[in-house]
Image 1: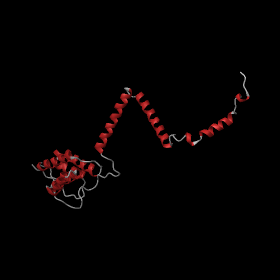
Image 2: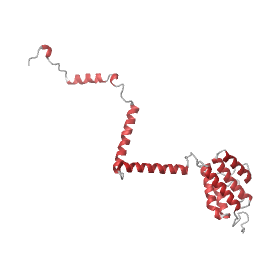
Image 3: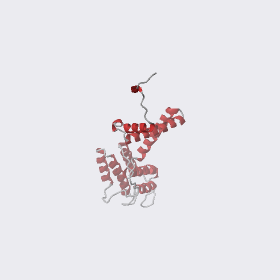
Length: 217
């Protein structure tokens, strides 16, 4: 084939050609739709998570279905722990006094608890119900007056006077602490359980009084 002068191919040296291509591709117009730094980071994160899941599904019993079942189980365990322990708070105190400086009778504590319950303020209702239980035991001389005692101390002392109710008293003290210091949220059933305990304690006969150390038959 014969080539005329106009048909002679143009040959560009390799290095100048590469530099020309780099200059052309550096034009912002070519990159206006490229992902930004954050988007590239997210893409890499998803790639990494996808790799982990692929590896886990390959080693988990039952493959992907087994991995899904395991994930649901872990979520269920986490939900159960959250329900039991409540939302974590920055401080947790279980050694503070049960009563404040304003002294009330057991009847007054019960009335305040009922008012809170009527307004669906279950945390406050539970707290006042526990205070009413302890104050009632003090009024019956089953507990010595102890303005600085904690709920746990009151439950332990009352449990010695009323051993048949010791476990329920400890549970009530733990409920008070979890709500007051641990971020736990009470509900209607929590309040009704404590109110039933208050009634049962009022009808209970102590085996051993805290005030005298004698027996009551």
